Image: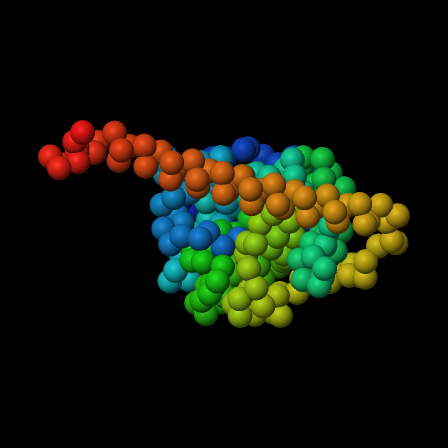
Length: 239
């Protein structure tokens, strides 16, 4: 397949393509890959958790299309889309309220066009990548001729820092907006269960952190056991 939507970008097929979305696209979700060889990874056989993206941005700023626009990528966990907003309002549900409510019941990937950017959230995207993303989103908005929102992974997932708050991310938001321009960003009517929801979100975050610690300790214990098994005592250490 070559340039399936006539956008003029190099096309490399992603390993995981979940087929035609069946619903209209309503926004762009931006990710930092936490790695550099993003095109090779998403098109290779080592992709875990069925991850894929509609577009990838290389470290040089090249935009590579990896799925047709009307197809579904695997960039979000559709079973755990957040309904909360960060305390300072930077990321969260505040910016995704313009989406159809079905994003909360499994269609988050169908409703979004995903961009996976090579690099790391602590200092990316770089200037060339910022320019590439802006060009791409402007092309998409011109193509659809209707409001297309722009946001980050953390707008949908409270347990992820992606894409971070670097200068590059802030530059993208400053240029492209956050959420959708025709929808007010003021918080909805106060939820009487908001306090309980916040507590639950904190507990969920701690559980994810605990899981990471347990996995790390398990790997360390495995290495220690392997080293002990392979250890041969020196003569003066034998009983």
